[in-house]
Image (tube, rainbow over all chains, first blue to last red; front, side):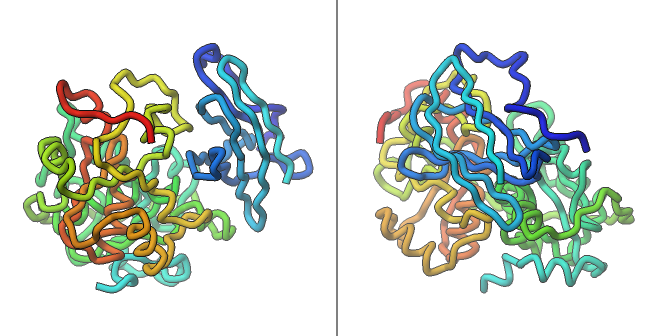
Length: 96
Length: 277
C-alpha cells in the first residue's frame, strides 16, 4: 500500500470549470484510511456517498453551496463543513 | 413474511459462509470492487454486464437469467444472499431481478459491504469455484415493474415516490453527486411525486431502519399506504431499495419499481415535468 497522497484525486480530464467539485483524503497518522465519505446538504440531508480509494481519496460533483462531509471509518465518524463553488475544486483533508 | 425472511445480518452470513445451500452474491456499483476483495465464498454478479441486455435498453430476459444463474452455480433451491457497496443499491436492484424471475429464497445482507467493512470483518481475494447448475427461472413478474405509461397514468392518482436526493428532485442536479453531471435530459420530477430520498430508509452504516421507523417515515411524508405505489430514481437501482422497503419489509402490495426512471422519463417528449420542491 502506498502512502496517502496530499489532496484529492488528480483532476486531469475533469471539466473543472463547469463542475462544482469537493474532494480530498481521509488519513490517520498520515496513512490513508479505508472507509466512506458521505455528502450532506445544508439541511443535513444525505446527498451522496463514496468509498475512499486505496490512497484514502474521495471526490464529489456537487453544486455551489454549503455542505457537510461525513467520514465513516471503523469505529469513528468525523464531520467537516465545506463551501463549494463552481470552477474551483475544494480540497478537504480529513484526519481521523 | 417476516423481516428475517428477506434480510439477514452479518453474523448470520458469517455463520453460513460454508453452507453449501447458501450462495453469497456481491453486486456492486463499482463493479471492480469484487476484484479487490469480497466476503469469503461470495460470487459476483456484474449489474452492467450480467443484468442488462447488451443492445437495447432493457434487462436480461428469462433465458438470460437462467444462463446467468446456472453459470454462477446457483440452484433454484439455494438461499441467495445479496450484498454490495453503496448501501446495497445494486444488491437491491439484483434482489428485484431475483424476485421478478421468481427465485424462492433471496435475502439482502443488512448494511451490505459497508457495514461489513466498518465492522472490520474479513474480506478475501480468492474466487470460489461453484459447479454450474441448470437454473430454471419463471416468467418475468410484471406486477413489480412499472413502465413509462404506468407512471404517466399514476400522476395525481397513485403514490409516486421519487427516491433521489432533494437536489435531483428539484432539478438542481441531474445525477447523484458522486457522478459527473453530464446528462442532457430535462431535470425535475414527475408531478405529484413525493420526494422521499432512499437514504431516509437507512442508518449511516447502511442498515435499514426498523419497520416502525420506516412506516412512520412514509406516513409522515403523506404516502397513503393503502394505495398502489410506483418508486423511481435515475436508473432504477435506488428505487429498487425503496421497493424492497415498501414491498418486502413493510409488506405493501402493489408496489412497482420504474426501472426506466428519470433517464427515461426526463427524456420523453410531451410529458409533464415539475421543477422545484
